[in-house]
Image (tube, rainbow, N blue to C red):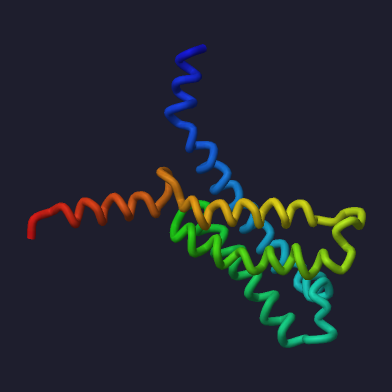
Length: 148
């Protein structure tokens, strides 16, 4: 049992890495869901009032979730990608659910709030040891140590 506890202590960051990859996969799924249900998504954004803004925002959300989710899953430009996702979730939490939908049955307020919190964590934490960002950093460090 002590060996397992030691292994967990040595590999504790794997949980954070798994959550990053899982969060990225969920964002990809959500982006494709919005892509397949664009009409419903535009209705949620209240497209009747500002059709061009809703159209632009809907496509920004889809692109950010699909491409950004893939980049987040592998840990490429993790901080930047998480920061690009943050306005989407801020809008969901403070604009969409501020209309009183947060307490409605079937509301996804908690989901949006959780994803927003996780994105904030990755803005500050970065990609971690099992990310493309870390590999790039290691290669850059090795390049800087080579004699010219």
